[in-house]
Image (cartoon, rainbow, N blue to C red; front, side):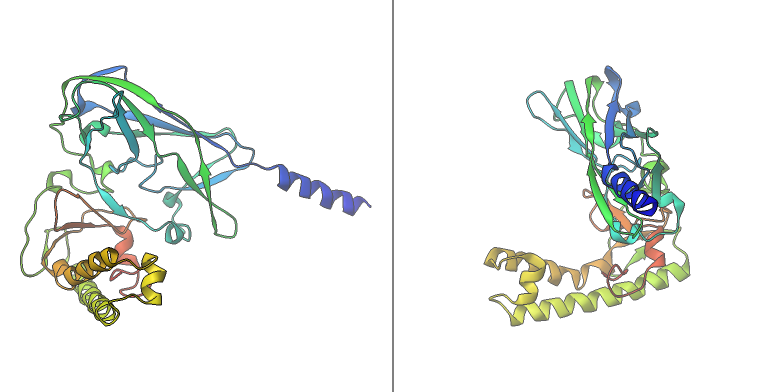
Length: 307
């Protein structure tokens, strides 16, 4: 009977455990020069069990210069996002043994993260006035079995009035770029062969060239499959949904481009963030910043360099 009571108590404890997060944004009331404009997100565990959250560079848990915020004025006008887009796979990060891949929060604990938003949102076209900063409120908790649970945080946005200088004259700091040298962020040098910044060792150049070769093969195989199945196939449906001629045309053109384009891009190896593959600036086509995780995955296969 005592044993049954213990089992019942444990079951009740598990059933009553909740995962809950609050997310608030702190910002100055007014800013005269966005070059020094920062906001702080506070992520708090408001539940009754310890959380192991992924430090996803697309979330409010990191300082990465990604499009983490929904920013707009009272008329719904948004600034131009000038930050970066990252390649990050949560399922891969969840298996990491690097403690820096996670933020662990006991019940009642919280963490503050600073975001230099003035350096990756350009308010010139949006103009002066009050802007609301609402952060991405989704977080991913790593369960004991390695699976992921998405938690939607209760969010409190911030309001800031902008006057004066509406575009930044400063570079992004290394913490916003996974350890990259900010002075090199916009340089572009396209050519017929892949080119490398001085921070890429000869061994890393060789590794990346091998991935480019494998990637071109994957692209050629994809083009061959698409051209052989102009009316669709089960494989196309699996990856892209119900067949549509417009979707087919876009997909074919994309893979045709990927057969050769990456071999003419410029690669930078200064990013050291260990859970991110790479990032790019949408406004700087052809420059790819390779990060720490990229060098620690296979050349081919799921989640690989070639992929």
